[in-house]
Image (tube, rainbow, N blue to C red):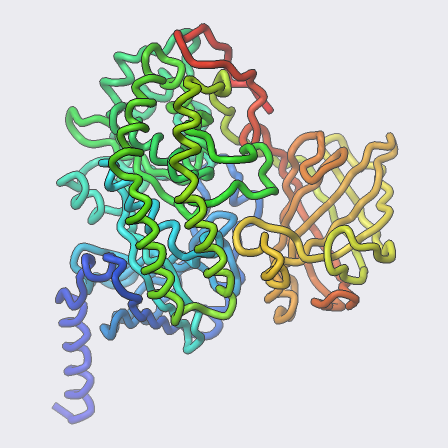
Amino acid sequence: MPLHLAGVAVAVLAIVIAGSAHALDADALLDGSRVVPVEIVLPADDWEALRRETRGPAGIFASGPPKKFTWHRGRATIDGTTVVDAGIRKKGFFGSVDSARPSLIVDFNRFVPQDPVEGLGRLTLNNNKQDASCAAQFLAYRTFREAGVPAPRVGFAAVTVNGEPLGVYSNVESIKKPFLARSYGSDEGGLYEGTVADLVPDSLAKMEIETHDRLRPRLEELAGLLAAEGPLDLARVEAIVDVEEFLSFMAVEALIGMWDGYSSNQNNYFVHVPTGSGRITFIPWGADSAFSAVPVMLPALGRGPAPAIYAQGALANRLAFAPGMIDRYRRRLREILDTCWKEDELLAEVDRLGALLAPHLAEGQSAAAKSLDAVRDFIRRRRGEIEKSLDSWPPELPGTFRKPMTTKRVGSVSGTFATVQRAQADDEAPAGEIACALTLADGPVAYAPASVSAYPLPMPGPWSRPDTATDAPLGVTVSGTRADGKPLTLTFMLDRRLVRESTGGFAAGGILTEGTGFFGSGPMRIVGGTVSLGDRGLEPGSRLSGTFAFGIDETSGGFSNSAPKRRPGVEQDRSAPASP
């Protein structure tokens, strides 16, 4: 054999061996004791395409499951072990999507069969955009597990892509077959992911199938029970769902203030449907909202301390009003508070994580220390908040679950704009130059835009703090009135990196509101499409100009719940879920 071919054969053999042997171990990667280096290499064009990719409103709030991002073939070196031909794509739904430091999935088997990590088929690398402390997910899932709820383990990774350090990522155990086998002793069950979806008939189509769909009839039976008029058939629900475990799931979501989970926001969860006679259980996901306050942009989720029970999800709400269940929940919450909420241990973990992660943080993660202080404050005061609520039990809750979100296309808006960027939204500035055309379901709308302004847009997560406001997306707001005198405002968001570096049009989106206030008083309308820029000013006083073309999608359900509140006791007859 020629020497050069022999070298190739040896190299191929080495790759095959590396792909088939367990060079790495899931337990070591996910124990949270160290920061594991993860170096990713992609073709430059693929990396740029990955960073720019976004779903837009139609992809986020569509009638079906969210569309997955595009896979790219690349190489990942994990703690010194190189995995070639790995599948790499962007991940995230809304708040964590980013072009500078995108969340990533590394799938070892996407393009070729290989098994480099024992007990793990992929890495789920969360960018911690909404968890600026980089600690909340680790602490949240640990609390779920201590309360007896199956939940992913979390490690930490220092991620580099094409030589560019991106800082600390949370390496969250993927909810896939290896997780099912570890948690339930079998990977044969059905697994569904819920993203802005609920277990009621009109929303089941949005549940994403992760394994197979052979057990859907059990989900459909549960959905029918939850949506039925009159008292809940509790005996039948308990035959389908592990209610005691679900009460633990609910209690931990409330205890850790997980405002973006199932019970509060019909979001971020998995449903496991076992084969045979086993009962349905819930698995938490997307815990970057835990140990934090509700963002000011989401007033519908409430203000002040997190409540001791969330009841927007259909199962959570129906159980809360079933006879005797609110007191069963109270007892379980008290047990978890007494056995799992150990302030000294939690605070010690926060200190350990702060010291562990600090040397690996990226420049854009400068708010980590301040966010860790906020987590400490949450831990110290949470017991008192829960006990105060337990003393005045039962609480007032929405009388029915929130109607799940649905979306339909209702129009379009396009135009040109030019303005001078403000330091913040309420600073005075010239009216700018704006021209636009607006169409809604009944045809063209007579709309007189009066002004356009650009400014750092307050957002959930790290951008909500003054010390990092310069990293916030740019908000562009077009204000004016309809012919009938009603205020109409278009606000869309521009990614700073794309403003600075793009050479053509790029994806953007926002909201169109009627009336006053950020969300207005009319229907919730979300816009998405393309922006092309001329002037690209990023600093206050600089000029920003360009064109935009957006589709308009109108949503109903989600975000708010207009049902009157009442205190759980004996279940009363109920009407269909109220629309906001």
